[in-house]
Image (cartoon, rainbow, N blue to C red; front, side, top):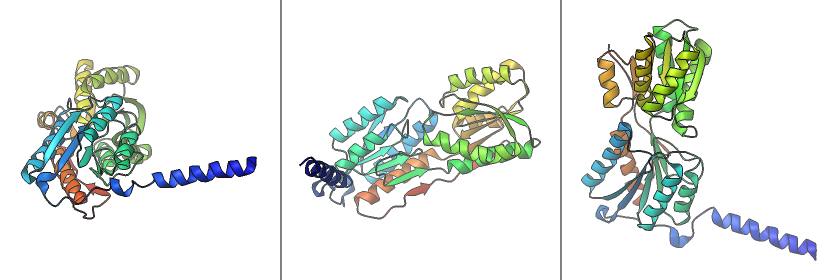
Length: 305
């Protein structure tokens, strides 16, 4: 009797698991032929960063041109708030979710919630670790990290001591930019220090001050974004050291710093284009068209030369 009961429980669990893999038929949205009927929900990791402001602007402009409505929420770099924000957007009956995750693992539950009721999800700049995502629209972060490391190798000798300012732990961009950088740096440079500064300029100042104090002989720094790079420059200026800094994003402050000779280089993304491509991907999904799982936005290394 106990064996029969156990078999029944296991069979039931397997059936429930199998059923949970796909949304029920009633949850699959109808095709949206009329763009005026489409409402987009956009969740941005933070609007306290010029890069993500440009990304948001790209979404809003493209949506307005196509006649679609957009509801924008700012997670303020808080994973818990972002999950609540996405749930609120779902309650507003959005047709598609565009999510720029604060944390790729934490956002997975929100993605799965959208999956369960048939709302398609597009991620921007950073991926989600779990759940069904129709497309990731992003730059090739691994390639960008390699570009930064190769630039340092070209400008300085192999074996040069360098440091790395990492982004938000858990964000896919942090993992990928770091991976690309180390693909080259572990072979041709000596990475003597790396520490998270959470993509934040103020934290970039503090972390860089600590790194310089512990490693006064470093010659170059790769920061996973421009905000941290600009913070690092402030710390370096105060120390009186001559240390090359390479950032990532290509925001306006960074480009001006490159022109002024303060920032050596930045791996420039196109955040507005990322936003535009995400809107178009969302439209295509809602209209039953096939979209690529990874939609790339080109990168360019910007220097003063």
